[in-house]
Image (cartoon, rainbow, N blue to C red):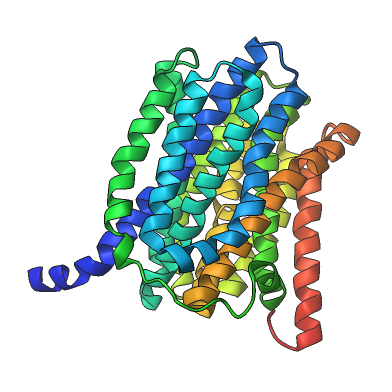
Length: 388
């Protein structure tokens, strides 16, 4: 057994390093957003100005993710990861020491670029190294680490506060500690010498049902995180309860990633994605109807959030089974690019529906998005004569 473990260490070590990298992405996003939001509010900036600051990360993801496969091909995995970690630490230091808030916009763009590099390369590494028979398990662990990272950021803010520089110092320390195995494992992650057959944006048309699932998830996840407290306030709940509803979704995400990953190792992943989307549609309708019933609503929100949270993970595993090498890196970049597009487009669209229908708008809008995705997938299936 010990000999077998030693034989598998060359694969396990870079897998663990990639998981550490994605946890960094979660911490980096969820830690900086609330601290900067509080500081901008205290400085007298409008909510719209605050929102544009958050959008800098999404814009960086859309612009940088298609370029990442070329950077990896030219510089190698280790160098790209080292650059990303160094840029991330530098940006955190800038946010801690630069007093002029207007400079935070380009700094947040650069921080978003660093996190995007970590995101794309770590997803490529997981898919490239995970054995096919256990791909879902490893990607389930990977997704769990991401959501735990998202949960850790606000917890850090709660411990050290949003004032002063302590939060940024701690984030910088986490980058250095968790980034060490990433850099050390860089040469163990397979690179590639040729360009992808298709650039990132053309990968969308090659696997549309998988790719559109990332767009859908980006819209649903960020729309839910940002607007669920608003939906709660407009339906008679207080702010604390609205925040608690967001926590139910987050804990559901953590709880359901591994079970869904294990299921994806036994069943067709694209069919599972369609089943998750179908559950998302039915669950969103159920949530709209159950809002007055706190306990039933909370339980369904936990389960619904956890299952729907598997949509991204299943799509990622499906890409890993379909592509390899440069094509896999390009597909991962397109997948993340669409996720970021959903992040930027989803909340405004869902917010407009919520303004028009305060009681049912948020979940009604989400149900409509799920229905549209299923309709597109069914149309492609009918046109091709097989599952898209």
